[in-house]
Image (cartoon, rainbow over all chains, first blue to last red):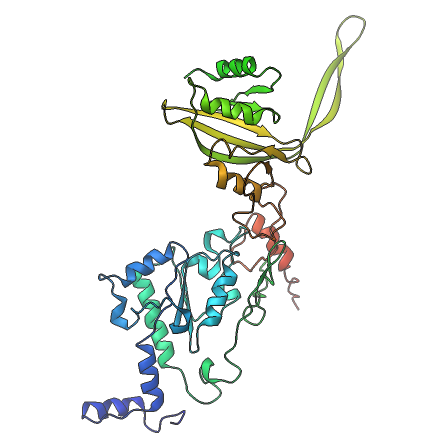
Length: 210
Length: 216
């Protein structure tokens, strides 16, 4: 198990064609994990309907090993934030995220979960779940089609397969500083307190063009 | 169904001393309404529900309206004339008056039994700050329960006699009433690529324009 395999991927493919299976612990570990991503079963808004459609026979998320929607966060690997996160709902969503065991991943599905979407200028919608939870995959759309969710899942699988087990670039759940509970905001008098987790999200400081 | 004038006259005959005012809607919808005084509103509502000719047994909708204080300028023009009667100039006298603000609750009533409606009734609070109590009509129409809680939450109207008056959409510790005209949302602006309108004003406050590039 070395960070850099001594043979290249092309050589390994060539060996496989000749009937010699050569693998690394990292590869087989990630291969297993990426093909059994179990999502947490919860929906927040209309995106959840598309998520349900993705689980049906026509789109069949089972082709990617992610059909086992778990009703308990303790058995889930993936949180699909499917819909509008209101400020009243946000602490509960973050609490669910904290109860999921590492390794865990988050997909922000749809415009609302990414940025607040059509409710961005409103007073009661969180302007993106990435203000509190580290998001791995963003899927735009209002709501995204089931194909888009499947594409997001495939991208997440690619990301999982590319994760390192050791070294400074190791996956988050293997680093001593990586895992940890995220901050659960409290209900303030006018807004959530704090309105975003400064460890996870900072307002972009882009200069405005004249 | 009898028209609103007839209903008003019947109410005034039935409840002597009650305040019932007909408010005309000048718009094309012409949904005129009855403004009820707060003192007898509950009795009048019960009468509207139980009267055999009206039987308004179903309240389909209750909503709130915020009317902030409005400033008007009245202009009085008096022509100044000379001895011959010709107009020299016109004196303009401007007086400002402020109509006090208030909150309003609107109920839309239908009759399931008689298949008619809607009859629109309104209740008005004294002002927008401390006299914001109106009698709850939930004891008359059960369907007002959640909607009155929503009005309490978003407009800050206090319903006297409601059996479970709590916030319904915002959390309990929330202090503001977001549907009021003077509500200011928390300032959690985020950079946007193409701001315009009110968002541009926010963008100017958060991301001031860079200083003009100095050309050597």
